[in-house]
Image (cartoon, rainbow, N blue to C red):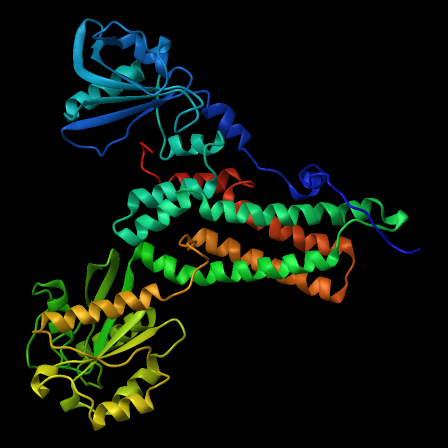
Length: 497
């Protein structure tokens, strides 16, 4: 019998839930802990001008009403959401503090529950007295990350957005901040959700064919499905490729400063940091261990690592320093290879580079002490180095003097341009190791789907690999979760978030 293709307008989710699974809302955890009203200090512990104490749960507004007296005698439970009131907190007849109380009524709050935030004076004593006041009235101290966990469980954000909250709090530079904000706005998760929905549609069509296998009816257009698989494969690969950039933007770009002894590595580190971080002398082998510090360039954190001079040595301590230098280079994203033209040859430089070269490493040659040569100019040395090393380093030679701020500025510009030249999927950059691992799994399973389509395997076998892809994408955004997964993620949060 000839196969017949039938148009299907039915949504895919209700057809595939029995096999693909649905979001696990951590039933035991949610039903037990979400019954409680929780409280925590939302600002850093210690004394400051102001502290903020956050309360979330069904009893949050009523519990504050019992101990708060507005200067206008207003009852909080009668007021609108997103309103602020000045008044005093009382412990029986004793005034604890004059405070501002902000009311957020469900579902229009961070957690999706009733939330009250109390802005009090920053005395540690006052903070503790207020916390004890509410705990004595039956409010439970929050666990780490519990406010954000409730926001996730109540559908206020997906799991990748929740993880971005922690990244935003921990961000220490513009690059990390931008990645966290982009992810919090849902760009990454919306991208994955759209891909997952398209795969769910085809999965439901394939499984529907299995239900009607005796009628020999085809619901899925395999040509369209194959094009979708190729598109998703490319997107996943690009997302994975962006991780090398995202990870260093989040944690700082490791930059190893290497070269022969007396090339000026320590002087360069000191000049970049504008402080005497490393000891500088004319004695070869002065730097025996690695020295590291961070510098922000164009909003990105760069972790500069001054390493021991690269040479063979019989000194046991210096030899250990050289091995550590090689280890740092093997873990660096960028290598600044310094050389003094008067103390080396192009062949020596390229021999060193050959031992360090790898796909993930950007090598930038830095001709130091150019002031001793009367400035930078192209001579036989640089012509030969450029000719021999054309495919071994990413840029033309950068000439600097550690005494010249202008040349150091040019070096910083090269570093910034090198990082910004790396491709990503639009504005989407992956920086989370958990996401990277799951994207890897999803890519492997979508490749199996592609190979299955090309080999024209049966629909039941095709569905297995397709379900795997959908499952891994769902784990990233939280459509599929486990108690252990949520426990691991939210335990790393601060208490008040």
